[in-house]
Every structure is written in C-alpha cells, then in structure tokens.
Image 1 (cartoon, rainbow, N blue to C red):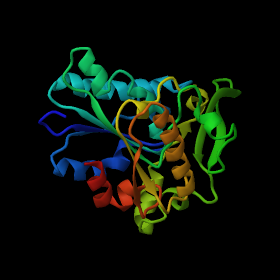
Image 2: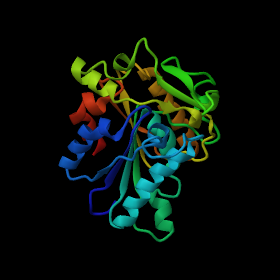
Image 3: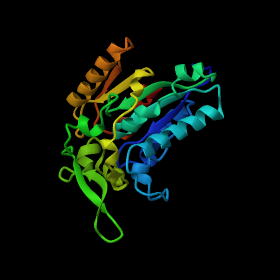
Image 4: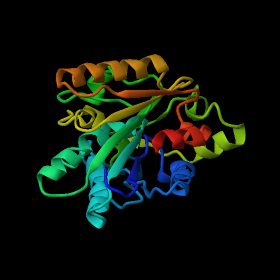
Length: 268
C-alpha cells in the first residue's frame, strides 16, 4: 500500500442511498480517509435521468467509474472497496483489472487493495444472484413490475421490503424508533433484474476480502452469512489464496447506522 491512506469507496445496498451511509462516511473521514459513495442506477435511475437498468452492468459501471476516478486523480492513493448487502453483488465484478496486482502489471502504481463486505453475497463466477437465491424470490421482498407508457407490465421488476415485517423490522430493528423510521422513509424501490445476470468475475479472488457478519441480522440471518463466507473460502482455497477474514458484530442488517464506531474501526 502507498504512504497515503486509501480512499474508501462505499457501495450502498438495495433500496438505499449514499445519505444512509453518511454517518459512517463522516466517521471514516474523521480518521483521515477520503470517502466516495456512488449512487447505483438500480435505485437512482430516475434522479439520474436514465431508463431503468435491465441488468447488472449499469451498477458495475457506476462503481468502476467511481473507483477509476479516484485511482486516476491521485496515483499515490489506493482504494478500499466497502460494500453493503446487495452492493457486494455488483461490487465484486467491478474489481476486475482494477485490483492493485493487475494495475501494477499494467504500469500503474495504485489500485484496489481490499474488499470489505457487510452482510452481502459473494457470488462465484458463472452463477447469478438468482441462482444463489435458489431461483426464487427471497421472502423479504415485495415484487412488482414497472408499467410501460400504455399501462401494461414491462420486463423490469422492482423490489421493496416485504411488509410484514416491513423495513424497520428487517433493516433497522436495533435503532431507536425515530431513527429507524427516518431511514426507512428514505428507501426507494430497487430494480431486481440484475440478479439474473451471470457473474463474470469474482473480486474476492483478486484482493484480500474481509466480511462483517451481522449476528442479529433479520434480513440475511447470520447462518446464511456464514454459508456465504464458507462458499467463498472453498473457491479461494482452490486458487491457493488467503481465506476471507471474518469479523462478527452484534448488530442488525445496518451496522453503518446502529454501530457506527465499531463499523468504522472495522473499515479502517
């Protein structure tokens, strides 16, 4: 790693916005890190003035653009990629050719040096989020299809948190009620179609990967998070590389708002 602190690129989860992560980002900045949190098109396409995404590539490209900008702006500064929940689905393939070993081979001096995942999937090359979910909609999702201009259903599927139990119970149950409701009110529908796309690159094979298991998670229970890590470790072992480094935290699905100090310490 270079002599400068790396920039931390934060990738938000489904339904979320960069604003949800601002408390964590502020905490990291207070420790001297620069942070960047791009808005993913699968949530923010309308405000970005673009059509609804039809796959995963739009999110991957948004993440890569943020990373590439940071690497090009300061050749002496590396990048840490920190992804929450769904965010790790596009973040992992976004690492391709931007990891530091590959960048060094191509004559650059910086690159991605670590991949940090908070309660998110690590999908192997050749499969998809849909297959990972056993080709069925997770029960925590309420699904619908966007309407076309003539009022008929389009091929674009969107999800919102299923109610019951609702977003507060799923995502923010360990926050005070007023804070939980504030964050829940900020959520937006998420375009689901990218889950059907095959993953072409598994970033956890390219850079050291750290996983934060949220032990009180109501959206992705801790046993499933452990299964994700175990599966990735098998993939990594076949390549003769270092296993995923696991840290456990006594939080729900969103420790970036409920356990800010601990999550910030982990992210450093």
